[in-house]
Image (tube, rainbow, N blue to C red; front, side):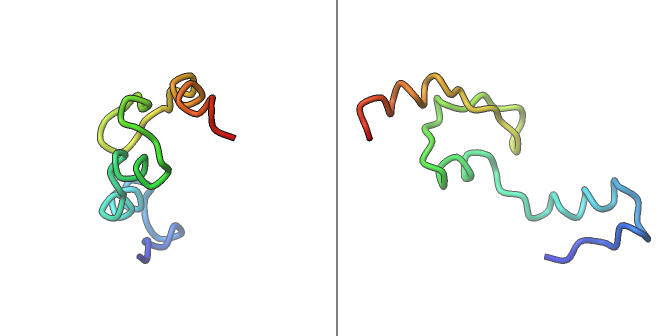
Length: 62
């Protein structure tokens, strides 16, 4: 993926080009081994992680 040259393009143009290749947050979470209920989504591409749920799930694992 090649992004537009930042010295020749506006920020919104660079962001628009980058968004075409962004993974959905559910896919990223799956790649990291997170459960769906451990996410606090903010749209399709951004989320916070509910770390208390993650720690609770992993408490018995080394």
